[in-house]
Amino acid sequence: MTPIRIRKEFPISRPSPTPTQGKQTHIPDDGTSVAAAVTPPSSASSVVVPGNGWTAADKARGYVALMKLRVVELLLITTVPTMVLAERGWPGWWLVILTLIGGTGAAGAANAWNMILDRDIDAVMNRTKNRPLVTGVLSVREAVVFAAALTVVSLLWFGLLANWVAAGLTLIALLVYVVGYTMILKRRTPQNIVWGGIAGCMPVLIGWSAVTGSVAWEPFILFLVIFFWTPPHYWPLSMKFKKDYAAAGVPMAPVVQETPTVAWHMIVHTVAMVACTLVLIPVAPMGWIYTAVAVAAGAWFIYAVVRLYVRAKHPEIGPLAAMKVFHGSIYYLTALFVAVGLDPFGPSLPF
Image (cartoon, rainbow, N blue to C red; front, side, top):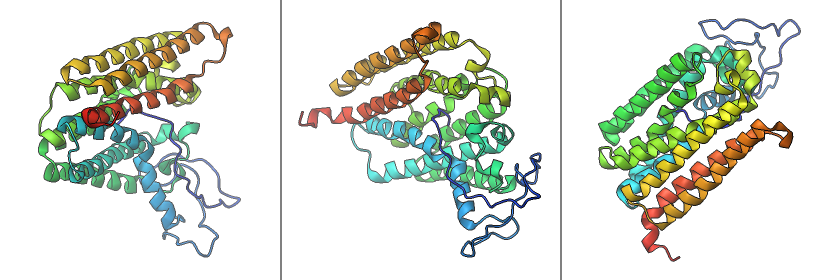
């Protein structure tokens, strides 16, 4: 679910190849390594999984890496504050914990399916070449079983422990990310992240429905906030790694369009995003905490994106510094949703 940040893959100790190994191979359907065959670790204390040379610890880290938990944490940051807004107070630890567990499982399943389907281009890109299906620490068969199990368990978890509205919305999010984005849009259009990013907007609807059993205008507005936030969040990352995407044949906007054009589109999306954050104030309605943060953070983020555009148009001014906007977008969304979560408690705060 997608919306997306730089991910440092979990370190996986690779067995040292013998002198006759190291030759690159294709990605076979039975899930053997993208890299060459490897030999078992030399450490006598390692518990080696029979038949593939990887230790049990390597396997465990591989399964965790499939879930891309550093991406999941950003999705959860938007979920809990939305639940607080739905309840107009704390919705209870039990509901929050079960929603976070279900959301982590569902997002992890979507990310695992993404790695399965994208393992060929992951092998080409420097940013993703250490993923477990590329290194061979997990086979495709193991990854498919894991992703399928996570999918089924997370859907049943929401349906049986929360409600079936939340489960249905979770299924929609999975289908949008796995089928809509990964299988259809990602390799075909520079608008891939725009429409594929819908999956990353779904946690606010899921969190709201977990509390109320329904959806309303408030979570839909927050949905639009994340929808318009996703391109100015992800396109700077694509600017940084545009050579990787080009080598992999993925038509991200910064690969197929001029940088000033992409930066201008970022401004348009950012202005629409900030407008949505302000619309929430009378609709919810929101108090002074959210209003102050939405106005101040929105003005700051617009400035950051405009600055990127100016530098894209006039490179002589200085470096593009696209990653500053990428990291800034994460700080912005975090601050905004912290304000969403704190705002219902505003009247009782001692300041």
